[in-house]
Image (cartoon, rainbow, N blue to C red; front, side, top):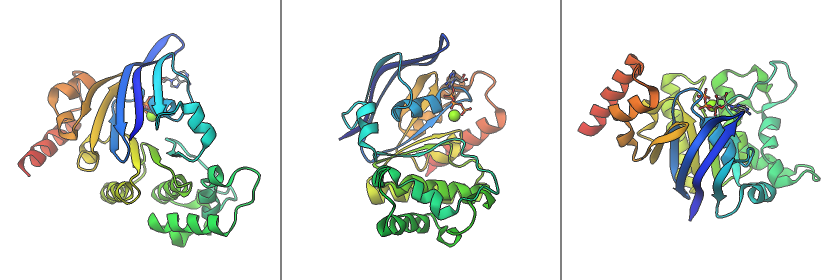
Length: 258
Ligand SMILES: Nc1ncnc2c1ncn2[C@@H]1O[C@H](COP(=O)(O)OP(=O)(O)OP(=O)(O)O)[C@@H](O)[C@H]1O
Ligand SMILES: [Mg+2]
């Protein structure tokens, strides 16, 4: 089944084309990485999929339905926004943050019950942070907060997990573990995962496909194909960062040899 189907979609903010002629077809259970430069439209595309922004033109279907129908049905998406800032002393415990992710499931008019606590704890355990359940969320490290936020996104038992640059704040060693963990969740729950990232070199081994976005798609398909000099230049311009470039080319060589 198709999880996402987008046809010739355009988004315009204040007369500026932010997304141009976007077409995307994603099967259920696939893991796609969306990469591209700052301001390229990654967050906007995720928000379109979530039904939070209306396109200027074009169509989008989520499991064959319009985004507003999906929003009303609730419970399809787990969403990790790019910025989730909380005051260090804001009195909300880790377990409460995760329970918030259950509201789509609980409904606004019912109090959370034992099953909700159980499910929330299960998600914290899956993310390896169950021991933090009574800590204040704002006092955790960036990486810990990230794990808790993903537990929250999973707590509603979504069919599609949407992550906006989730590895920010996680160190390089932690990142590999983190992508590995996402891959495991994808397989375990046949979860469709859509992840915006800057980290094209690191995600290639984990995602099933990559879409390179700079207002329009410059590449879509097999991750290895994205690690191409021409694609990178189209995406980031001629002054593509030398360090990143070398890193990508090294990785590319290594993967081709394997
Ligand atoms: N609500 C909005 N109103 C007006 N312009 C917007 C709005 N949201 C985004 N934009 C503009 O659209 C462009 C794309 O922004 P977007 O946040 O989608 O990029 P991004 O690829 O996620 O960037 P980053 O890598 O920095 O997160 C930017 O120029 C931004 O200023
Ligand atoms: Mg963004």
